[in-house]
Amino acid sequence: MSIVLPRSRVTHVYALHMLNERLQILVTSEQRRRLEREAQRRGVSVGSLIREAVDAHFGGVTVEDRRQALTVIAAMRGSFATPEELNRMVEDERDEAADVMLGRLRP
Image 1 (cartoon, rainbow, N blue to C red):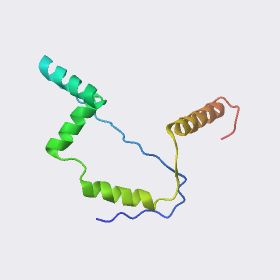
Image 2: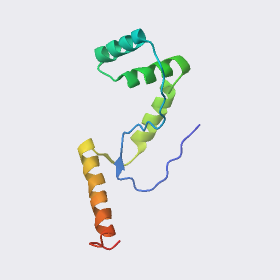
Image 3: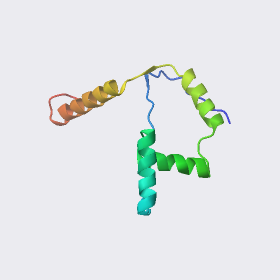
């Protein structure tokens, strides 16, 4: 499978992973203690630990998928924004939208 990128001008590339599915499970007290202990040992959340276990058991993103993604990202022209810069850009856009809605600026 090959990925064709548009030749449009890209100014920013964001490294974000969106989680959009919520799952609720019941575990025993002992399972929860083990999960919390391991998550703390690794310095990650219990949710992250569970997502990792699901990928390890049922298959996740393959090494080849990751290599292909790196190739695509490396071919992009643009710059990375730090989380602080990204937050500032979002706030600026929200402020501008609010000004337009309040009639202080024209769209």
